[in-house]
Image (tube, rainbow, N blue to C red; front, side, top):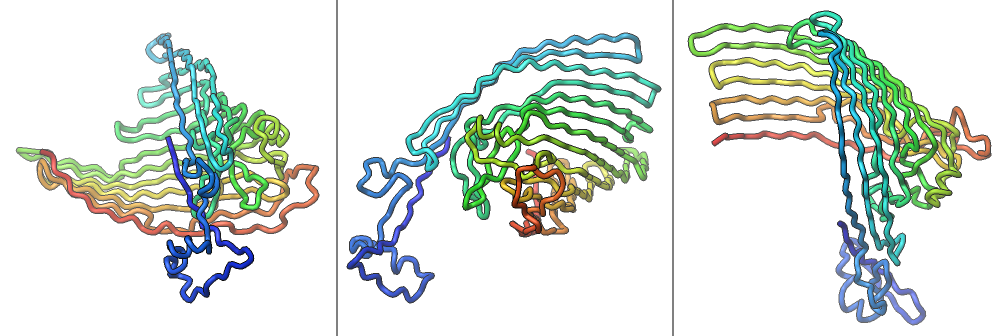
Length: 414
């Protein structure tokens, strides 16, 4: 549940009101004080009105309850020592209720999402050799909207405003995955996987035609698709063990890499959004990618572990991550999509055990401190044919740096 009251200070400019000269604009209390309020120089209002409104101090509120009742059954069958299959069926009754009284709807209202989802799943594994597997999986899942995405409440962040869509409904996902795995050793892995996803009634963030360029959420079309390939590797670069009378000294250097390439596409339907939610969404493109999905996601790490003696060791890890440009919000009325620019990150983490009970840690995250940028792209590609005015140049709408995150920890186990 959430409640908040916003007090707005309105300067009165009626006839006969003589406003004082403000010498220091940074001294707020010099003007907004009890004497000037009593003199009628300004008034205080909430979104419900001023002091003459009976419920002026009633806060904006939204809240909700959610319950999911589930039942499932699994069947596992081994055809032979190399081939196994698991078939499952899960049923979920979903109830998500929200109620609100906000500046967007002062009279208040409520809305319920009531759905039953039947979710079959199939998983198969075939052992090719002692160190190789082939896996296949197919399933049906769903994506449930969050409270924030459904509550008609204006969320005002530092440089972006959002409001929820109470008529947002869940998306249904059909997933297929196939993967080949190779285990050169117990600590090593090489895998290549293909995946495909069909999303019915996809949920996307969208820009709404408004003075503030507000963002909301909507089921923007009938179907979206995602196709991709994933490669993962885990390699032991160096491993050494030395036996002593009282303990085993281990030194190990390992590295890991994960790459995922994905292509997404969806057809957009502004009329569907207006009929279901009443939102003014006239998509610039007739088809585009899915919001929040990058074409490339890469993760890599390298770790070194060393024992000094029993209960004395150190583990050092350097991890790098990267995602390519991804759509933050879909473009509307001839404006391009708002795109979040891809960024790399680099983190360092070290942990050392000093005694059986005592350990210390050091983490230094976001070492590269890249610029976080969003830009509204120049319109190009599969443009909605009814558009006669389009954005021809890219425009930066946000740029900042997160800064560095340094932490030192001390842990003691009693």
